[in-house]
Length: 309
Image (tube, rainbow, N blue to C red; front, side, top):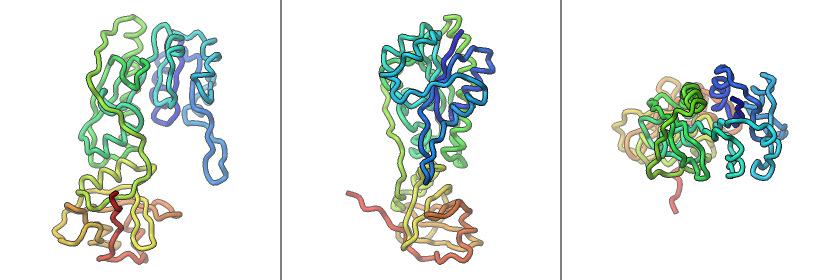
């Protein structure tokens, strides 16, 4: 069975490895074009491209696949596996593969269709998520389901750690799915009504929310694009936070602990959060305790509360 694997970020690496280790013929890897990175705008390949080249695989990087798929068609592959590829597939592209196009999606569909399902599940305070193997159709993540498996979300998770676990789970599921597809032995399940989640972006923390909501926002946006907050003239990106016990009656956004010994604790509308890791604008990632050594951030200072329109 000749397979094309389409993926771009690190999340797709474990599934790509699983397909290769399954003994299948990966005739090409489809990934997004190299993107400029850093202050110098150096063109940088995707993690999937780097791994494909390391393994000596043929790589395709069309700018717009929907209008530039002749090279893909020439491969005459039987099946395509997609995993966070990042471009919409047209019916003409779906029709290239006699055994179908199968997507590894990081949620239990029909929940969290679309972009950023991992981050959104954490931000929304979900206690579990999972991975779905779905037969791709024209709708956005609306295709019939072949396999799905749930995965817990821990309070110690951020988007990075949960992505790693779901990537491994996706690798396990696609390993189970491919033999079924090859044999034609796969009863499919229709999806019910669901919803599409939007991409995530850097977000200012609203400390008037509950400690649960604030900690989930910070963890869901870490390691990028970050939740941030301003205190005085200082802007901080937050890497990790946890809920903290609080008996203070101070206004939301008030610093109620700020010392190398006690760390950084900020009052929320309900409860408080303890910031464990942060990054000052233009600085490096560090523990909150290290940051507070010699810093002029003291108990009673007030973080900004975003204005609501």
